[in-house]
Image (cartoon, rainbow, N blue to C red; front, side, top):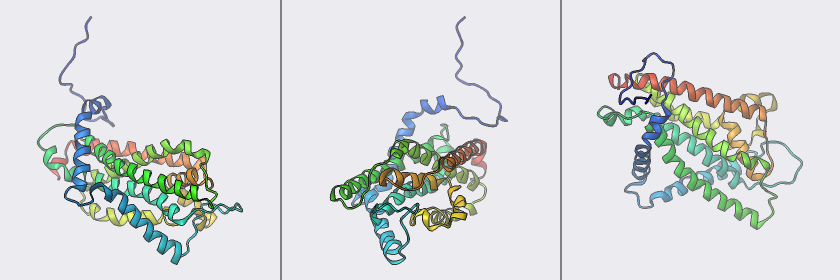
Length: 290
């Protein structure tokens, strides 16, 4: 018997999670158009264009190197070791900067999903998850540009010698680190976007909250600066294992704990699924509150 195909399928509105992956795949062309729109609009009417994706992290890294590296003289070690491995402070700060820059930029942009796209969402139907996915992918293009710049500078220091840096086995975790960073950024962003449709005050706290979160993450200092008896608190921050493992992969030494790395993945997945549930509930009625 031939199976019937229906154009409209009526489902219960009380399901815990209403996530249709096949529908998102069908709208892949729309995701591409949104990615193109977001990336072009970000650098539209700028003289340097996409070069800002390189200039911004470079300037940030220079500032961090001068203030936290030279003036404050904060440690760039994630673990105290007797090995004579010298990591240039500029490269250390750049590694943390490009990871954190993607996270904070994606969270900020995704947190405005409903408000920024309310005009088009009120007129045309498409899966609402298209917009946060497109936002994360458009920012990922900038991340790739910054990552390539990091690789070039890393090779420069390797070729000039005197550092002792080398790739470690943790380089094979790099794809997982990037995937986790994308999922975590989207998760936090869609949770905030869902809440800001009703509580606009939360939008005012995003930038301030991310700034505090940055200083609670070893971006401008090494993990070794934190006393050992409270390090576990910092390692429960899901961004921390990503950044310190990223540095370990390229510098050849550092700190890695499989336990806290798995905890970070667990927190990421919990936040992501909680975000999907909240996002799906809010998207049905957000036009009444925005």
